[in-house]
Amino acid sequence: MRSKLGKQALVILGLAFLVMIGALVWFSGQGESRHSSGNTAIKPTKQVSEKKSTSEKKSQDSALPRVSPSDWELVLVNRENITPELYPELETVDNITVDRRIAENVRNFLKAAQEVDPAFHLISGYRSVAYQKELFQSYVDQEKASDPSLSDQEAEKLVKTYSQPGGASEHQTGLAIDLSTVDALNQADKSSMEKIHKMAPDYGFVLRFQEGKTAFTGVGYEDWHFRFVGKDSARYMTDHGLTLEEYIKQLKEK
Image (cartoon, rainbow, N blue to C red; front, side, top):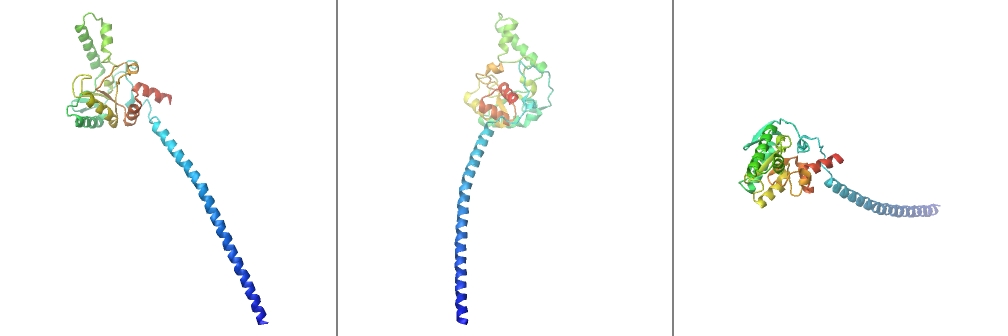
């Protein structure tokens, strides 16, 4: 009796062992299957994510800065936008005055320029509307004295190629400076000026009157006239070769 029961027990234990082995094999196969299919699903998802991230970055790099054309540093003053006296709060930098909000930028820009050439200095900054009127008229008188055949209108037209009537000059904003190694327009060393033009955006400035842009600005090339517009705007404008007139138009259209 004991022998028979012992044999039956061994058979039962053997069957149980085989069932356990089969179960382990089955679960192992299922795990590998899930792991394999999981990797296959993850890879394309990651690739799509990476592509999307790259695309978004390119879009952000080319996007306009998040500024408004009504921001104080983007005020547009020219012959089509005659502006009354703005009365900016002024601060003296070197030998000129500027809007106090950009004083530190001017100091840093001047210091960087002098590292290129110690001869760089500030020539002009803020000018009141009244002073600009007097200055403009003095240039008109000089042109007429040089050429008595010129009428007042002809002399004014000539002067407008290098100076602006009162109310049309950026200098009244306190945001414009003239910076050069010499006290004469377009007479500084070109290679030195090119370096200054390239570094200007680092301090929030742009070369205001570029070559070939008279149709937009109404003013010919001026190597020394820089305008503060803020670092983001300055970099975007410089990278895209935009005048302030063109830039503001883009901002209004976005």
